[in-house]
Length: 288
Ligand SMILES: [Zn+2]
Image 1 (cartoon, helix red, strand yellow):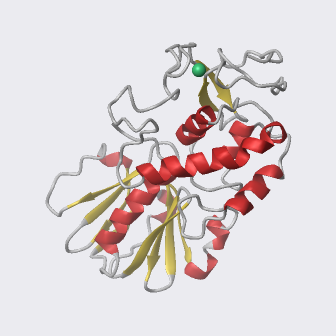
Image 2 (cartoon, rainbow, N blue to C red):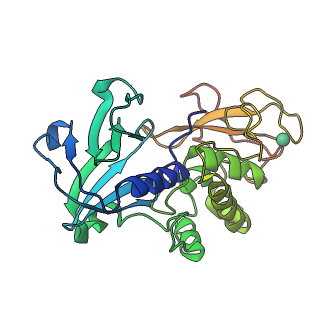
Image 3 (cartoon, rainbow, N blue to C red):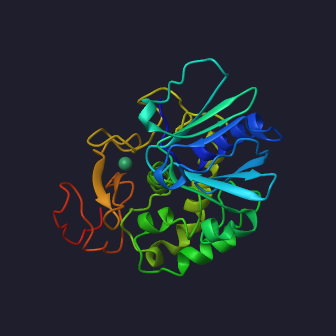
């Protein structure tokens, strides 16, 4: 199953890219992007490849860093020379980094940029603590979340300035597992914030070494999620049909799933929250 590009997807991809490229010299380093078409990294040596939230940083020995981002649809594929590239049509290829042993092909990559390594912070300095990073800082992530008390919790967890790495899948699933309504205000679920952040991190740690993204412990398709992608299907805990709605400011609104019973809220949810049909205002929700 094709995973949703989230922090764990990028973590695994960076690990594989690092294995393929670290210490090697590029015999081909081409960019099929208008703004970088003149850039040629042939002859450059790769120092290391590291993930930072959902960004991948490819650091070169000459103190430059190439940053790429998957957004919704990007991916890196690694091939042996001479094998067929199967990541999509040729016009989707954005970057090719090849050594004598490997061909790394970036499809539909976004935010491709090269900067001096000393200036990396210009690209990723805004990010909150990295959920899968060696310098993960739970207290700082909670501090950042709590600095937006009126934000919907489902929006706040996705904001990479609060914590870097989680995407929509882990947001949806960890909110369910902690019994939190996605539209609840951060301030109204303060006592559960640490639990939901810790849960998201645990789920990502459990999935980072393989491409599947299971939150139930079951890798079988259709059994791998609690509520994500299960609109109208019975909740695995209480049998209530799972609801689906769009959450977040345009144009980054994301589809959210929740169980109205397991994730009932004692406090009013944001009256501007939309559910069901996109654009249809939702009245103040009543508990349950
Ligand atoms: Zn339920």
